[in-house]
Length: 482
Image 1 (cartoon, rainbow, N blue to C red):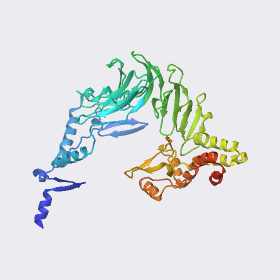
Image 2 (image 1 turned 120 degrees about the horizontal axis):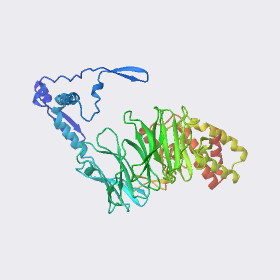
Image 3 (image 1 turned 30 degrees about the horizontal axis):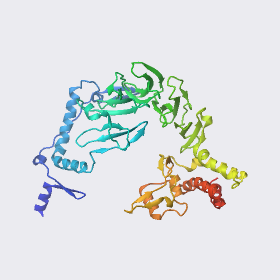
Image 4 (image 1 turned 90 degrees about the vertical axis):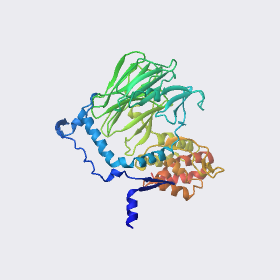
């Protein structure tokens, strides 16, 4: 028995999957362990928000180009201390690395996305540290054009990272930001993709950017050099050193950034704090125009904005603790014009059709109006999900390998209760489906209520398409939650 214990002390055996790894401690593992390095105390009094705080280790926060030798020595001593404990397991570490690396497809392509006349994608290659940024006029990526080769650009630097990469709407110019220190402080560059040359344009400490539609201007978010708070938005004229200050966020509780709507027709400046937001907007084809506020900041009001198909869309907690989607016309996106998306883009249009067809009586509108008032308390806040849009059991099949396949989608982003609710209609899914879903994902306590209310939309559609046989289901749900 003592012999077995002695042998066990010489080896550490770990099984990962079908791989057995044996780590043998070094012969010096029983030697006197190194004592942990102790940083000296150098009190420094900091004054923050009217309070005085003593930081004994502020000297370690050395951000100068020429580092304090004592800071470097302290870091090196800590590395040596770590090595005295972990160095004996280097063989094990190497095996773990090989195990993980063996499960990664090192030479691979990202999924391409379309923008204008091109498909954009990244390529990683075995043995190379960074990806290459490419585009092609064909979806399959044939004859790709190299936009940025991060491996070549990183040569000569100990650290190299991209921040933003944005191509102008006409596909001629590429704006990108780089960090070569690891301090997450990014420098803007502009590359002419027609000639392959990088222009002289350069702006420091860039945190966000967006193109004007004509490609003549870049709107740039910039951070303060000391606090690193994003506080300024500039309009940069490409090909020059001209920068016009568009907006400065002076409230230290807020950070500011600039971006563009998904349809590329609207520019936004977003000012955000922990409990309130404020957005400004400007048509992307009018870069020198006047920015306008959508809804002025006020304590407790959080929202974000987007624009598509001639309308503004908002996610807001206005009169909705758990947030809701609203819309407003392009002519007036101020708060007085906001209307609820689920109500006015989903339920109400179908309800109007049903009333015109005399499938529902006009006097019954009061039931639905009462229901609308209860919606904010029914739906919990959660990230939007990619929805199938028509998820009933007729759109679910298995292929020849018995793998599940969804067909005939009407894809959009929304609340997951839309899809989950519909799985209960028209025959429903098997309990195995729900058991598996509940195992992997948590749901709010009132999930059945959410599902029923969401089902009003497909049931109203079926009422209008196929007649009065769906009337009782529609009214039962509406009356239950009004």
